[in-house]
Image (tube, rainbow, N blue to C red; front, top):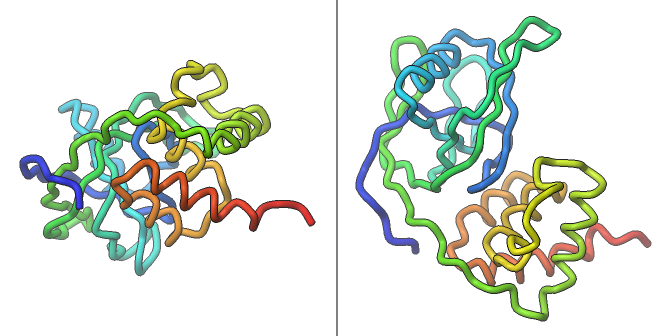
Amino acid sequence: MAAQLPLNEVPLFPLNTVLYPGGHLQLRIFEPRYLDLVRECTRTGSAFGVCLILEGAEAGAPATPAAVGTLARITDFSHRADGLLGITTEGGSRFRVLRTRVRSDGLLRGEVALWPEEATQQVPVEFSLLQTILERLIETMGPPWRHASRDLYDDAGWLGFRLAELLPLAGDEQQHLLEMTDPIRRLATLRDILPRFQKA
């Protein structure tokens, strides 16, 4: 288990997806509680926590979040064609939720313990196929990493997180990969998953 840094309280945004460190996530904001969250984070320059929903839905009554999530910082705003506010976020540190409380407006807040960043580890040669697969995924899907430095592909943590967010994995698989603390084991898990996506 990862060592933990000092406690923080952050607003939580439960979603039907997982945000990984260094990842990018675009969100439509329409509920008043999340408009308040965006205003708070913009005013203070603070982050909010993204957690996978274990029970419930993104809208309506507060959902039950997974115990491990990722801090998200707002990097851009847009006014969408449907009239809603759009935000772009970038994933930061992971955290473990120790306790939660619900504000009167339905916004979930959590006391969280931050995890330290993973140490950079070189991608072992036996996982070089994963580097090639990620290159092809990025070329096809055109995410923000199209012009990523070649050095990043040699970073086991970066490679694993990018594959985890681009492959069509189930929510529990995404969450399991997020909670892993060994980048090499994460790559091994992804390698074992890959045959599922090979064409017959």
